[in-house]
Image (cartoon, rainbow, N blue to C red; front, side):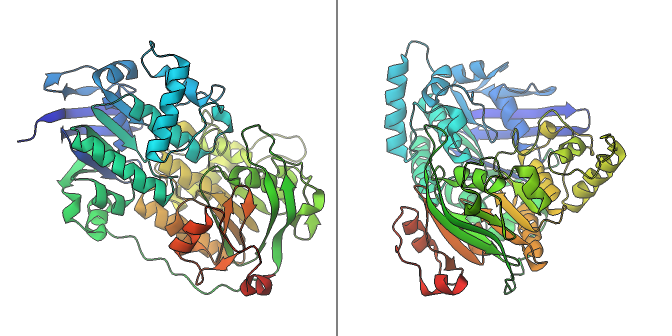
Length: 510
């Protein structure tokens, strides 16, 4: 029999409002890629953090290489040969990529040596990144590349990956899978958390299923179907999306010849961006992370107001210089890709986080807050979007990534926007919640809202979008109808290889 690398016995972790892990046991063999599957809030990430020493279990025993082991912190975990890629990244914004990676490696290595190792690893694994860039200038997808590279450079015996492909392109995912299979062939073990059932079936040879902090089953995912894995995870298959033909109305958002020099030395220049979104339609924008998505979204949301005023037109008003609040007053609502720190303040409660984009609870006369109104609104969103939280006073940082995403999307949809701009709508969200979020976006479109979706999930864009465009090197392609688009064509356009003249359909849309 294959030797066991990691054994967990009756691991239990309690928090004031929830038991995150309830007597969890599992075994991971050497050379095995072992999936941990479950809904958002099932306890998967907490269990991984216990293995990595970032969280201390209340009860239970951990065995590594046959020896009972107490892992008190991540440094001890790394010394044992355990590395982890977190879903919420653990990077220092003001340090460079190389400096962040250097912190977790052997101190005898110089920064120059580490920089060279990063370049070699990035090239070998298709995870291109500039080691000199400060982390604050990176997109979410680029930060994820840094986390993966840092873990690989530790040469781990056990690699824990928490949603590692959530913002990677299909091409990068394929390259990553080659790497993971190589590591497994060398006898390394991998614990793999993902909500992408097709990935688990393609990559993993064992699977532990969790629900509500309890292990509810195990299987070989290669002998399962997406349907059977979904039933193991949530008890059923989510309902299929009902996509109806759209009936676009007036132009809500028009971007004309938007050109912006990068505000950050490591950013991307925007080059003659042209797009429009009509009421009652969804425009999807695809692209490899770091190709100008962040700069475009900042210009549209009002965080970057350097554009010529008439380059961004909202309801026939030139708003290029307008701040976010004035654009919100016209009906623009925005869900950023960064959940903690931009979408939500970690230390504030869910009800308090409503104040970032909702002002109904603020007295217009004296500026007092009506906390009861905020709590009622927050509870309504929790109920409507099935957010697993202790209540409206739960801190944003206490929620799992997927549940916080549901709350943030719910917060903006519940505000009945006229234009919704949403980035990475189902990043790190389980299959049931993904279907719920996508259905809510489609319902918003059917109610007449204009929707702009930026995502690196091509399947998601193909499912949601009425039209698609691709962003590459700060430029935007002509648009395609969903019927004209296919994954192969979009993948080619991601390299910037698209026709320079608008298609006939593009002329018709404008």
